[in-house]
Length: 215
Image (cartoon, rainbow, N blue to C red; front, side, top):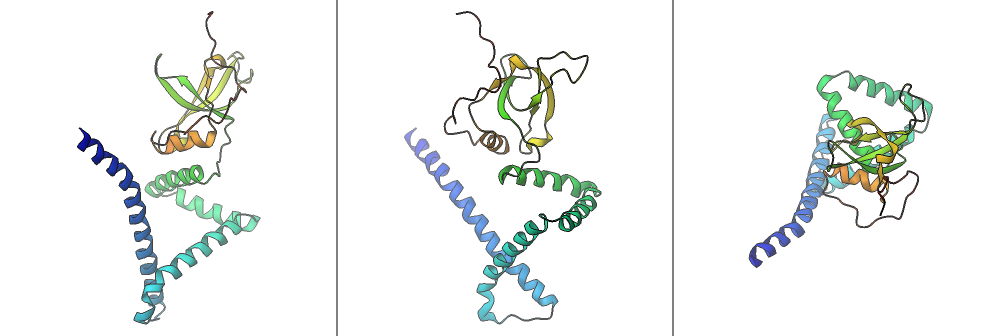
């Protein structure tokens, strides 16, 4: 038993490190390869002594490209060009699905959410005794007649793309607020439940807690 526990402990410790090193090695190799191929298209030969430095140049140019695209998004003309490119991609059936999935994951990981949730919570779903994480969107407040007041709109996310979830109208007293931030809850969803918050971020009371019976 101790042998098995030590093996699993070593695997848990080494696996993230090996995956990270593999990813860095992949980026190093392919960034240099892409840059070398681009230079060959321009009929430019790279001296063999310079080949080990090509990956670093490729990474630097990639960072510059990301910065320039970010700059474009800050002005009207740049946003219009990027939106036109996005619409073109969304017309392609398979490419559209891949693009949407990667876009939502990127928004989740890097903090640029398209939808601003007020907080994270749980509801009893799909049946009593089972709890599902959700994001509180807003109270209904009588704006969906004939549905009465006292209901809240929540998004039940799916992993690893939270925004592809299902919108549910839940009685407000059945929404159980969680004492974690929306960002921590998003990481939990994107990681398929592997990244649990380390500790509560403090009491949050913008929604009523689930009603408790008499003690």
